Image 1 (cartoon, rainbow, N blue to C red):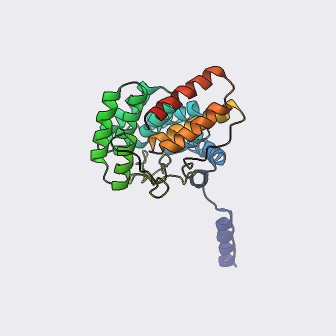
Image 2 (spheres, rainbow, N blue to C red):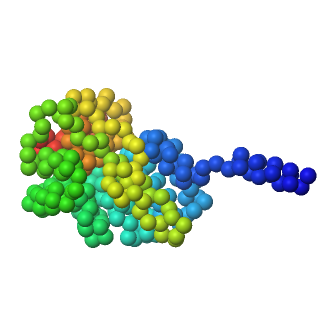
Image 3 (cartoon, rainbow, N blue to C red):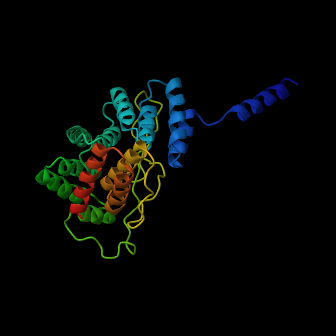
Amino acid sequence: MRAVGLLALAVLLAACAGPSAFQRGLGHLRAGQYAEARQAFDEAIFHAPASPAAYTNRGIARARLGDLDGAIEDYTRALALAPDDADTLLNRGNAQVGRRDYPAAIADYTRALRMNPGSARALFNRGTARVLAGDAEGARADWLQAIATEPDPREKAVMRQRAGLEPLAPTPVAAPAPPPAPPALVTPAPAPMPPAPPAVAAPPSPAPAGPPPAPALAAPAPPASASDSQALVTRALDKELRGDREGAIADLRAAVAGEKDPGRRQNFQNLLRLLEGQK
């Protein structure tokens, strides 16, 4: 009878056991369910407030929801716990570009490169931040070094096109660029400071399966509010950083069309003109 009781208890415990809040958050990120991912990481942080991976992944969810200030706050908390995480620095740099704080973005990319000198993505993104800040010479130097460093021939070709070193393919539908890679997920290890895990777009870390790039001729519907416009701009900058300029321009056009505030609309138009001038 005692053995039967222990077996029943084991079955009951197994039935009650389920994925942790952190694992649920990763699943939601991979499925593109960013609001649900944020809620799951809220719970994960409540149970493990010293987990840099939980803060980093909640930052990714926040960035995808258009909350760049919240994303940067989470990335900063993660870096306070794990200062040498190059992926978190790369993600924070991308969010700083979205906020148009180009000096802060350049500083984050530079710090990430000190930790991982072979990161072609950090080099190319720093070049993008530099050209947006008006440093065309520095941008070109970063882009050329990124192209020389990138081992993937397809990524290398996309970088050359984005840097203006060769014309865009006349038939982009026949030779599409690889899908953009969302920010890298960070999975904690048993050690106090978990190492950065593998990504989908870059070998070091796995990434959530985000939505595919928008077709060049299919702009999203105009947003209904300022938060929708900012989310479109955030997505546009993310696409630009990952090589999908046509998708970035389409999102920016939709943001301009739907933005009601004159000051924000002018900022969006300035960025749109900058990207259209680099095509």
